[in-house]
Amino acid sequence: MATNNWTYDPNSNYGSPTGSQYDMPIVSGPNGFIANNEDAAYYRHIAPFAAGNDPYSNFVRSKMGEVIRNFRAAQATNTNLQLPDFLRDNAGEGAFRNMYQRMTAPWARGETNASQMGAGRMKWYAGNR
Image (tube, one colour):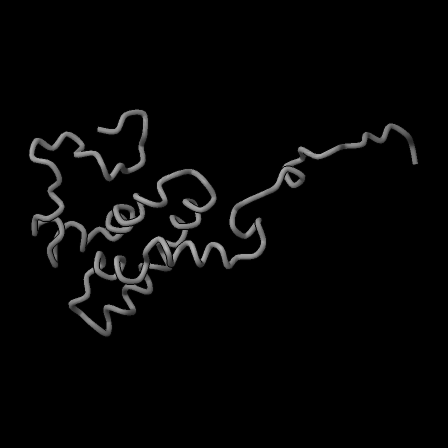
């Protein structure tokens, strides 16, 4: 079990004596836990490549609503489409990385350089105008 860390760890069995229950129909079946809890499916999917607190991971987590809306639109075309399949085929690390890299402004990616954080030189003005 992950200690001192509240983020999902894909390598932990979280105390389950039989390991992961993910492959059971009650969890990942068409009307299972994952199908009814899209946020859990999303976080399980992105955990291996975006579990940190860096700008890229924050960016990927911020895209959950957009990805879910696109999944629902795709599901209107194929009502048998399941979210894990959609995520695997359309929302892999490469897709997120490309989208992140296409944002040209560092501030748009959640990045800031030292001068934007006030770490640059500062001149005090101690006079009157």
